Image (cartoon, rainbow, N blue to C red; front, side, top):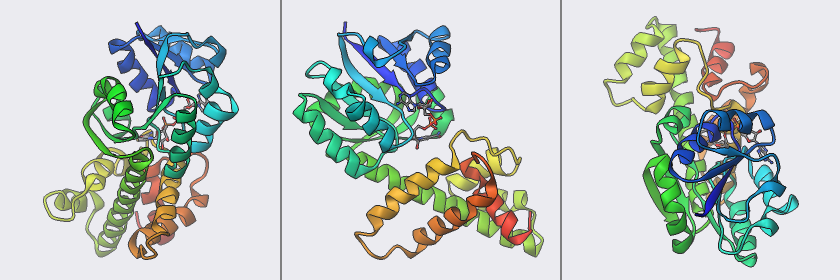
Length: 291
Ligand code: NAD
């Protein structure tokens, strides 16, 4: 039986690899050994301690790493492309840069390997239940290879184009998602200044046309209780917005999302170490003094 190696076991990768291991033979690896050992202890997965230990029958590699730099380092600089058997397919499920993905897919082809980008939306909660939205880019035969793996992890799976297209759509999704959080924070702040409590404001917006996933989920779960613990880092959201801004340069007119990007970028410094992405609401508190 062919096996999968799942690499990157952080906020998202750990619950995804756990589900994957219940359906397919799965080896797991993270640069932090405790992450792979901890996962192996409470799932069907088998931990490996280094890339040298990848079994010969691996035909699928799933990556859930922070950025394209980590993906390039692993596949090219650390030589994973060289190590994989011909015909294996690499599935990058992180939110990477579309141009880097296009280049890596080309290099994968030169090694006789397939390459699919399959970034996800839905956060840690949907990763735990296997209900992620998955946005797929890649050649049809590589995507067909990836499908049985993706079906374990997600509900809505959309194949949007060639390699890189999934990552482009994902970056644009997050640009929109972050802009919605900033816009809802802005409206709630203005409402609070007028005397309407933010929780009342958000409840009303959720019955009206101003609603978004920010008002329906992020405010009630993470922002209004002041916990800011969604499991998705502010810096990773900024990374995604920056990718989308790079794509926007080709168009030359993106005033709304550019303003949101600048708001999040300029607000970052005052938030301290490792803020959650929902802490954009705190940028508004800091800048206006209104809670
Ligand atoms: P994370 O920082 O929690 O996890 C990343 C993991 O990768 C860490 O465990 C780290 O040790 C490991 N790692 C780094 N370099 C490695 C290497 N060379 N080899 C093996 N392991 C390595 O990040 P996350 O929140 O799980 O996000 C991962 C990706 O998914 C990012 O691209 C992010 O933008 C995207 N994403 C995150 C969320 C979310 O809600 N957290 C949602 C959708 C998409």
